[in-house]
Length: 267
Ligand SMILES: C[S@@+](CC[C@H](N)C(=O)[O-])C[C@H]1O[C@@H](n2cnc3c(N)ncnc32)[C@H](O)[C@@H]1O
Image (cartoon, rainbow, N blue to C red; front, side, top):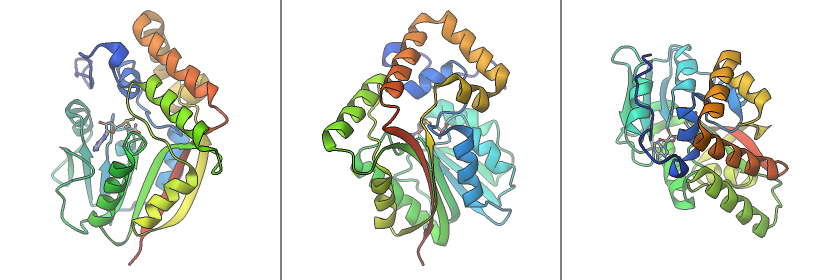
C-alpha cells in the first residue's frame, strides 16, 4: 500500500484525536485490547469456512479482515464508519463478493438473515449502553438462525467491582483516549448478548497490554514495533498521548482486561 494513503483523523489536532487513530497514525495496525492472540482465539471460535457469509463491524485498519479472508468465506462485507479506514480496508478486498461500506453497525442497511457470521472488535466499548444494545440487536437481525456472533472488547473486572471504581475507570479511560469509552464487566457483556437472543459458546480473557512493548512486538512484529517506536520518539505530541494512555491502562491494570465472546443466535 502506498505511504500516501490518508490515515483516519490525520488532519485533526493530535491532543483531541481519538486514541485509536493516534495509534494508527503512528503505524499501529492492531487496535483491539486483547491483541492478535485474543483475535486468533475469537476466529478459532467462529470457525469461518468457505460456506460462510461474513459481516465485520468496524474493521479499522483491516487486520482481522485479512485473517478472515484467508479462510475464503463465500462473502465478506465490512461496515466501517470512517471513510479513510474503509478505503484502507478496500485495498485488501478482491472481487464482488468482498465489500467494505461506509456506514453504521447499528443500522447496516443489510437484509435480514444475510449473514452466517458477524464479528466486531474494539467498537462496542466506545458506545453508550443504548448504542451497544442497538449494534448487538443489528447483529442478531442480519444473522440467520444458528449464525455466530463474536465480540472482542475491553472489560472491567471483577464482576463484583463497586460502581464508584467502575465509573472512575470509565472516566479516566475516556479522558486518556479522548473518546467516550464505557467498558463493562464480563457478566454485563454476556447479559447484553443473551438479552439479544444469543447463547454464549466460548469466552476468553486476556490482559489489557495494548501499549506494553512485549505485546506490541507480538502484535506488530519486530519491524512494525520499531517503526512505531521511532514515530513515538520523533513526534512529541503523539508521544504525550501514547504515554498518557499507557499510564491509565497501567494504573488500572488489575481491573482492565480484554474479553472475547463467541455466541450463537438461537433458532
Ligand atoms: C478502536 S478501532 C478498532 C478497529 C478494529 N476493529 C481493530 O480492532 O483493530 C474502532 C473502530 O470502530 C469504528 N466504529 C466506531 N463506531 C462504529 C459504528 N457505530 N459503526 C461502524 N464502525 C464504527 C471506528 O471508525 C474504528 O474503525
